[in-house]
Image 1 (cartoon, rainbow, N blue to C red):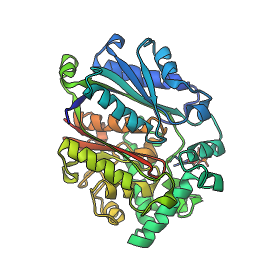
Image 2 (image 1 turned 120 degrees about the vertical axis):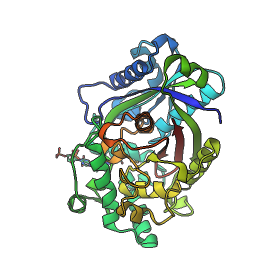
Image 3 (image 1 turned 90 degrees about the horizontal axis):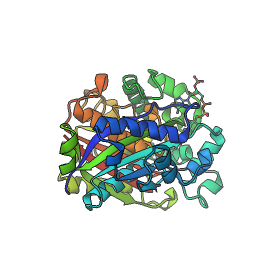
Image 4 (image 1 turned 180 degrees about the horizontal axis):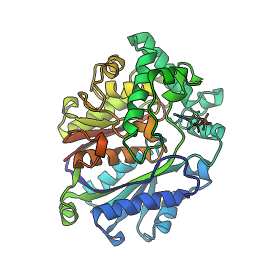
Length: 384
Ligand code: COA
């Protein structure tokens, strides 16, 4: 496919941000991205906003217009994009397609979620609306519960160990220490994970991504337009999206996320790349088992070998394929609608050489964003 340039990036701090309103979060990240790109608000032709559930988390729908209004960008058209936790990744894809279609030359794509204004029970119920409400959530199933089923089955089929799951969390917490925007800056050990409170057997508190407020934005431009503003664009060279069954019990095999496999296949084909070309990746580790499924589904390691690869340090900074250098959803935080955009921000920082102490040596990176238990997956490939 033709390339689309990322010319600016912006991020808020992730965490419990009680003093910042929902729209302020987006505006803060958006202003940072616009400044980074060196453009003016009047250069922006459209806004795409990834958001999962403003209605349930902050009693706010009609988010696209709210954002355009509070950012002072009316009458620019603004569009909300929703695919549960993959809303951000899908918003990026809509921005890419709007530029590739020739409709726009410069767009802002962002994601935002404010999850901590309600109590955990309400957050859990809201997140569960991304499952099959009738057959899963209504029966009491939660997201930690769904991923726990997958983890158990993965352990049964492939011999993945409880300790290997914990090692994903240990690595991602370690990476987040060097990310000033991350929710957690705490080093943890395998022992800490194994001793943390049980959430849904076998997953424990430290296997889970947290509940997070935050926003992320990027400025996308056509290749021609990008050169007018920056000399260090990072290019999106591949984009893939796939759907699967929303309910886990309808999936042929729950230990392989077929939406990830199919989205990756499309993204690799569009970018004319293969898994072995990827040098850094941000993947959807909403739960530790999620990262193992991701590195297997994306083709970085053989199916069933994700736990072993993690244990052997292949996915650590300095390893064969560093994964979640930002700290991932696990430790950077997971404001669901913003996550897919924040992943792109991290890969852009890595490819520009601006990732500070978590910097790796890479020219080609990948982002992988999942909605629900794998009903949607979106993959992007980025290159210098
Ligand atoms: N990882 C590490 N620490 C966490 C954490 C996490 N996921 N969640 C909470 N904590 C910490 C808090 O910072 C707090 O620490 P403190 O006592 O030092 O301040 C402590 O644990 C208790 O926090 P609390 O807010 O009371 O936890 P909770 O019980 O309300 O929530 C979970 C814990 C696991 C239920 C919640 O994080 C969760 O639901 N995570 C999954 C989110 C999810 O499903 N996302 C969508 C995926 S598709």
